[in-house]
Image (cartoon, rainbow, N blue to C red):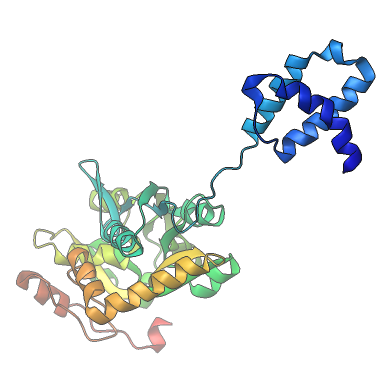
Length: 332
């Protein structure tokens, strides 16, 4: 260190002769001066020029000034959503709305953090979370599968799954869930979703027709392009809650069971613990149920007691008149 200091002293004195380069020298600046001293010994002081040395010292010190670190808990929360999944998230008149949008706003307020919504196709949300492009998202993947991906699924927000939507006139074609699983009909699903996985794994005889969104799938069903549309249970519940809907009906026996969860990276322990704590408190206070009811006023599942709370009276009779649950043996 003493030898290095003696070598650097002439360069320090020369830099100090220029008024605008006064100030402490950063460690990076010392390294640059050391290289400069070596060059001086090879080509001579006058060749390089004193002013060039001073300028090099000043710019190096400026560029290497340490930046203030930003705590992850102070940065804006990046929430990934897929905006074509009503009632979870959708765009209306250019404004994002839905259950996931409201949950993101409420959570950010509870965490006392700014937040930004980042729209991505549903099939890319998990990769974006793993790659650090977002901080959290919503998913129905099983906890074990999330854990294998280095992710953590928090406390459940909503019990959901995949259901089939059909034209009302075709209701008699599928009196049992087994009839649906064995069908060779044209079955639509949204690419990159759990519905797509289910169709490929369980409806092996069907003519599989991918679509880009739930809206496109329902339109294809109305037009006769497909005969069955597989999507989130919430899509079926929305149809049941619409008193004007008489063209489409849902088979309220879930083809799969799932839980909607907020998902974070496993290493973001502080964030996930805070989110779980907030959701638990909201559940105890009834706040979470109020948020759910705002966007999903009715939930219907056959195979358990039919729930028609919030369902318009003119739709309750059709829900209660749906075919009785098939036996457990016939649906497995």
